[in-house]
Image (cartoon, rainbow, N blue to C red; front, side, top):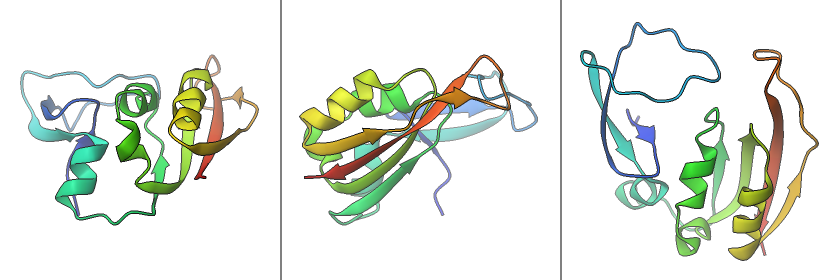
Amino acid sequence: MLLGGCSAKSGYVTVDPDYEGSVTTRLAEFSNGMRVPLLTLEDILSQNNVPYGCVLKMDCEGCEYENLLSTPENVLRRFSHMLIEYHYGYKNIKEKLEKSGFYVSVTRPWISRKDKLMRVGYIFAKLN
């Protein structure tokens, strides 16, 4: 098991384990709490000897944009398939994945039951 967060940049963040957020809560630094490592997708793959052809499922309540858009194409191509939940549109992620060599399909968004202002959908990607 890996205790950490997926992020666009490696580092650390202090989180308050008693803080109750919502689906729109962004990762924030707390003055007291638990220090948690932040790892990029590349870090996770290399530190855990994840083989080429693995599958990525990403449901991170909005951080999918910074994580995927900052990941180099050669790292994305280590995945054979992806299932990504999107929250604020899909255009930039779809373009990045297609540029990286994936066939991409997208579901129509629907209104989130947890947050009535949020539109949610799924991106499916398969490496060509």
